[in-house]
Amino acid sequence: MAKVTKLTELNKYKNLRGLSPSAANIWAIAGGKGGVGKSFISSGLSLFLAKQGFTTVIIDLDFDSPNIHTYLGLPAPEKKIKSITDNNTYDLESIMIDTHLPNLKFISCYSDDVTQTPLSINEKSKLMSAIHNLNVDYIILDLNAGIQDATIDFFNLAQKHIVVTTPDPLSIESTYRFMKTSFHRHLLRVESQFQLNRHSSEFMKNPEQYNISTPADLLYTLNEYDSKNAAPLLNLMSEYGFQIILNQARSMKDEVVGQSMQLVCNKYFGVPSEFIARLDYDNGIWQSIRRRKHLLMENSHSKLYSQLLTATRSLIDSNLPHKMAC
Image (cartoon, rainbow, N blue to C red; front, side, top):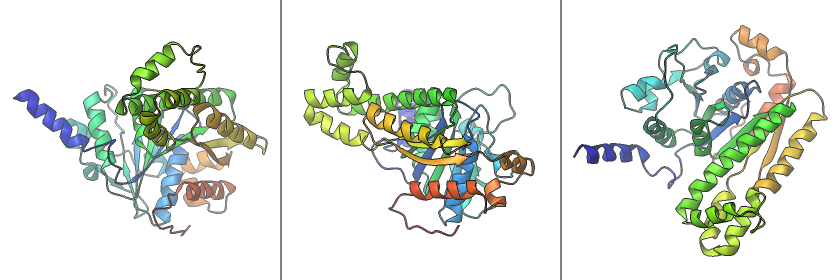
């Protein structure tokens, strides 16, 4: 009886996640390594969306270094994700925090408890379902750097998979590793839905025999061997692309890096990826943080402001009316 009750409880939170579209447009912002400006970009995107009239929630899921509240000029939050995981309610609206913009709410994973443990599998699943069902226009997920399981799962929950890198070779290498990991995780999940994982395992055990050296090769081979089941898989995978932001650029030459990453991703993964923005290095960012004011709220005449605004506009889905108020 207890086992049945537990299963019922878990199913309540799943609510067809993965089988039905999310209530909101979800954008996940991640990076292969720390220090690339991910949180600045996440907070900037959320500010622009809110200023354009969209109801927006930014969720800080960087459990290692939660700092979105600082970028938004807010004190360390008292309401936090741990509150709803501890009491098993998963009511995200109960922990939303008001910001300086009426259309922008904030949810934090901040904790000053140094003994805090990572989310369990059940906690992560319930939190993902709560995010999936949150009824607003846009949700911005600011994620941990790196390839932890939870980071990849939250990243793949989104419709927009935004990866942030700098021109630094170490950052680029880490970004490719992150994209490869998230793509393979998503592919494994989709394969199982169409009973193609047996074929995939066989192909990957003998990649030379089947002439497979990239994920794009694997998708092509699956289609060759089982076109009936592979067709819907290819359709789903075609919707899984990466949106690349090159941050802290110092010259026009750096833009070539972003363009090259787009070409490599399209060829290697076989899904449409897009280089959406080059953001210039701006020394004013750390100065604005010290004043607890977001640079984009302080200086609407900066080049960085116009660059990130253009990136936001290019990301906005066409199924919602554009309200260009910035």
